[in-house]
Amino acid sequence: MRFQLLADRRSGFRWLSLLAAIILAMAGLSGKASAQQTMASSDKIWSGLKGDVFGDRAILADTGLVRIEAPKRAQDAALVPVDIYIDPAKAPEGVKAVTMIIDVNPAPVAATFTFGKDAGVTHLSTRVRVNDYSWIRAIAETGGGELHMAQTFVKASGGCSAPAVKNSKEALASMGQMKLRQFPAEEAMSKAEELQLMIRHPNNSGLQRDPLTQYFIPAHFVQKLSISQEDRPILSMEGGISISEDPNFRFDFDVKGTGDIRVEAVDTDGKVFKDEWPLEAAGL
Picture 1 (cartoon, rainbow, N blue to C red):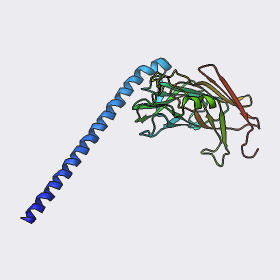
Picture 2: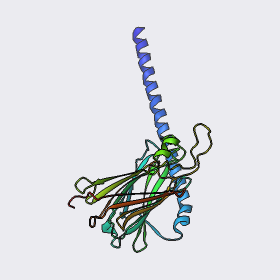
Picture 3: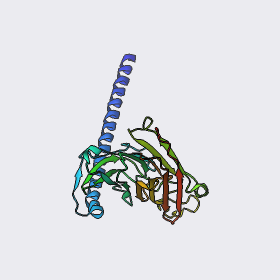
């Protein structure tokens, strides 16, 4: 009798294990199907969106001229790291601008970055909000007017309405403060010098609620940004609500001369923030 009970228990455990495996497999298939449906939905949004942003211009996909990287599943939907890479060998006329689009965000055009003619930018990273499962796209425009696109799919939810990290008083007290880190070529992630610009700003999306009143906090974000080496343009940006709180940009560039790095940012309230730093590039 004892051995029969043990056999029955073992048989029961096997059936439970099998049932659990079947449930997990079905959940995985369901999740995969849901992700595929979301990707298809995002593609449908893009088919209508690209005409609004680029008109009837042809967009070449996956040519290798531009590449975009982001985590497949975001740890924090309000702080999703994105890296954009440009291959200068595939753009003899250079790349003059890159537009980043997050298909399902309320304001899909996250930012347009414009590069100085001889800036030599090949890598740019920042942090964005992602409101739901979505393709994030980087569309590069060459000096000759061609459009090249790369895309990556990110699983995230609620990034645009996520509460601010800082309270409103703290955010206002430090708003506009800037910090610049400089990385000589031997310390940088590329062969050129790199800069990392950090700006204190709430960058409110307009979809966040005040924790006390539960009223929506008005949109208030860095709308324009320009970075130059003295009067030589390196990088400028026109941004929207998708750029995360306390905007952070890291990029490489070709140093020319010993001129200072100058930064000017303008937010949607018309406030202007400026700062300047001496160049600390290696060999100068």
